[in-house]
Amino acid sequence: MGGGAIKLALWPEQRKVIDAIVSSPLLIILKARQLGLTWLVAAYCLWLSMTKSLQHNLIISMGETEAQEFIELRMRFIYNRLPDWLSPHLLKDTSEKFIFRHIEQATGKPLDSINQSLPTTPKGGQSKTPSTLVIDEACWNRYARDVYTATRPGIEQAKGQIIVISNSIKTAPGWPWTRSIYQGSMRGENDFRRIFLPWWANPMRPRETFKATEVRAGMTDEDFSQHYPETEEEAISTMLGSYFGRTLARHNQFLKGAVGDLLVGGKRLSEIENLQAHLRNTDGEIKFIQDPRGILEVWRFPYYLAEGWRNEWYTKRYGIGGDVSEGLGLSWSVAYGIDRLSDEFCFRLRTNRIDAYRWADYLYILGKWYRSATTYTERGLTYSDALICVERTGPGQTTVKRLSDLNANQYVTEVPGTMGAPLKKTFGWSETAQAKHDLSEDLRHYFRVTHADIYCPILIDEASTWIQVEGTRRLEPEEGAFGDCIIAAGCTIQASNFLGGSPQILKPPLTGWKARLKKEKREGRAWAL
Image (cartoon, rainbow, N blue to C red; front, side, top):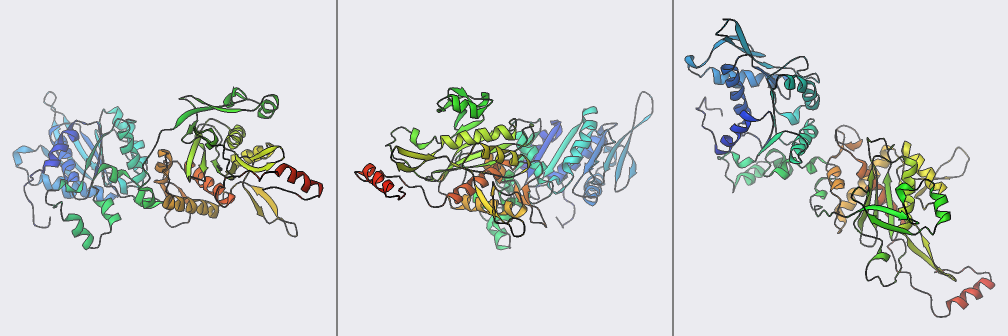
């Protein structure tokens, strides 16, 4: 505080944390700045080493200096102000180690307890069997994930304890791991006990004026949100560090759609081995069936299936975009459809168990299901499938080729051929860094301007962890996060843009149109709306 040592008087919010610190094998504390939690944990480690023999406390922080300060400026500071009768013999006192000697009563042999700071490296405490691991300033530790992974087996062997302490700095190198551990606790996916402390846990900060005072001192709203979060939701959100930023803030009206599979000609699409032969031998009628294990989630069915449909057909109403994986259980294949009239995503297809060839079959059938009208002819309406835009990755090449074999309605660009050769057509969206920037920027524009709700929470969660790598133009998900939904949604926007214009109701021709059509055909003139 700058005014000398003062007697420790716990704040009410600090008191609430003590039981968790003492009793939790796995504990993560996410907090605003300057709430004294590092001091509390330092006092706890000191107490453990003073009162228990064979205690080994490892401290790792954002850097070696900070880890040493945990011992030198906190533990030693507290120890030097304790009465002599309270502590055992201090055997070693350096910036890296603080060792107390305990004597076993039965044998008279020494049983030392060690407090040790370690350099911040990926190995962490790999060769140690610590009783307690403290990862302080976790969001700033670029090796936090490696440290935890390397040290966890030793902690498990010793039946010990791990305490993670962190602020919520979205651009810090260790934030993705810290956030994933905290969110895993929220979802019940790990055994960490979590604690969040807001900025007002410091009672000396007036709730009415503290933020205004900090802003007047030059802190932006974004900085304040990171350093002084007020709620758990604000703390774990990475929106401010995301490429998409605050454009995500209003997209929180998530909706569970109808989950299932498609029947094609009376048979599940997932069970059809040869799609082309099946379509030749059946009527090819497409129906939706509900199945909680299905990979298709529908928020809006094709408009011509809606109750109360007035037999009005639209042109250019649907686009589909997709990202393609190998289907080996690692990354995901994802596709979205967009209703260009309402400007909303109407379905999501997502799996990591279908190969790129079969993935094309799904996209093709979805394109037929979400069809639009094209023209009136003498025989009636003609239709066009939804336009499909797939990122042309390695497995994406397989999907694009299969879609071509199926004669699907695909996104196409013209690229220069070899010297002197004419332009050649290329299906799908390029995988270059510039193409990924264009994809992301158009998706960010969509997030910003659309009036439609985005029903998919997976998309928004991935968007919140989509970043531009510092010092480069590379766009990618944070470490440990996925970006497949981002690519799929971006390709969907490209499909919509490619179609151009807005959907229009296709009006029937005037009376006598069949006779007019015959006359113009006889005269050799093409006719269409």
